[in-house]
Length: 199
Image 1 (cartoon, one colour):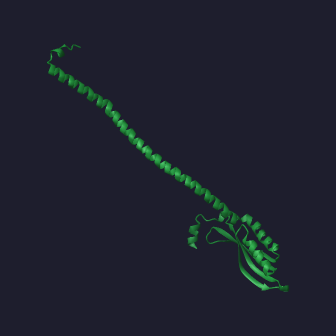
Image 2 (spheres, rainbow, N blue to C red):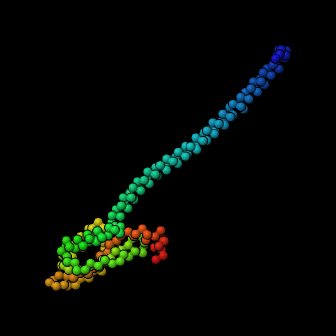
Image 3 (cartoon, one colour):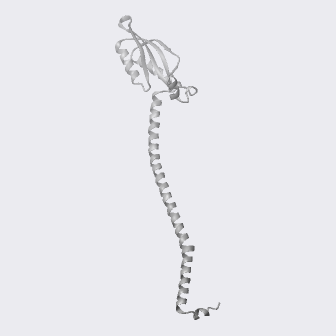
């Protein structure tokens, strides 16, 4: 390529031409190199900001997860405690034996022990298992019996209490001992609150 014609140009024109070439080269470098890199940097900054926001959200979720795990553990413990107080159906026989043993241990003589049919509570959460009981004994023995029943691990209510004088200064006491148990799985409603609302 013959560039001799450049030497023949006046100095001013050579300077203008040189400046134009430098400007074109710088413009090309800015357009093809700097601007794409700047756009890429801006895009990466936006991605980084979005990731930072997501990290903050996930950190908040992790903190909440720890709280939820602690709450779940507390509720599981509470459920286990409530299950201990409200036996399943197959455990009721043992509970009623404990009630009977409490009466015998207090010095009462059992004259009647008649279990009734289980009755589902209207809430749909549990069933009641009534037992008609008649015992003979003194006030003191009856008080000890009630105290022992009150201290059982499971819930037993004494209702329909009737006292009558018996022979030899003893009392004849009629009562209903009500134990409570979870419903059999086939009787548990899908939504106990809905069932409760209907009753």
